[in-house]
Image (cartoon, helix red, strand yellow):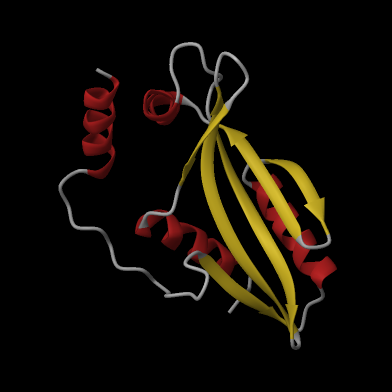
Length: 148
């Protein structure tokens, strides 16, 4: 039964349309860009502020990464719970992690997205969000913040 529901949800979420083209092919296979003439601290602050501006909670901020999350709501949360959880799991959260690395006169940032929920006995279920449209949204967000 769960398999049938998962297939139905995937059809609803994905539809029959062809997957959109990636805006940028990257070595990591994730959204990535370089912030030129900025320090790691400056880029970390830009990313942290961008998360807060979009209503995300900063879970972690360190020298080499920023992780932000937001509890999913509405139909998005319902579909996510059907896909990766069950009626006993917590409301799913959407998360994004930015890995930062000094590169020449700039800072390379790689963005990674996923959703997760905690099941009844504490185990975590995660699902990577790496479809082309999801990567493109994150890629555009990095460019909008001033990265190249």
